[in-house]
Length: 187
Image (tube, rainbow, N blue to C red; front, side, top):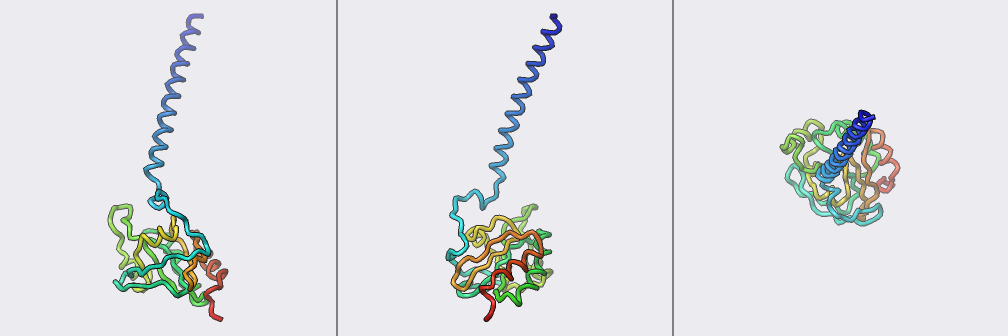
């Protein structure tokens, strides 16, 4: 009987110890979750909804030219130099553009990659055959438009209204989005 009491007491102590370990691990997971949240998500920023006018500004292109996005039907494809899905979406974007009527621009955020270095967007533009006058590097544009993941497609009409903001999962989605939004198609 005494051995049974001792065994029960030891099990109870081990159970309390395991409960303390689980609670401390749950606390650490919560702390890591807060620290690793994306930069765009931590800002208390009002989300731009489709139909709202976007304050478009003049943005720098990779070539150094200033690009004014106002007054035109614009298709913005947000990409990254290290993103394999972005590279698979680029040909579909270029193929769907002629019949869409949208003026295309590729947008990179200009943030350091996983290695801590800035990606070489000039090499990326050359490898993907993107005109450097059409490659914009702007983190603020993505934050303004509410782009949280890449690749993302943003369509803006000539009045500066947001038509579509969609995270892309593959090449088929690009053509569907561009053809489903005929506001820019020529009459």
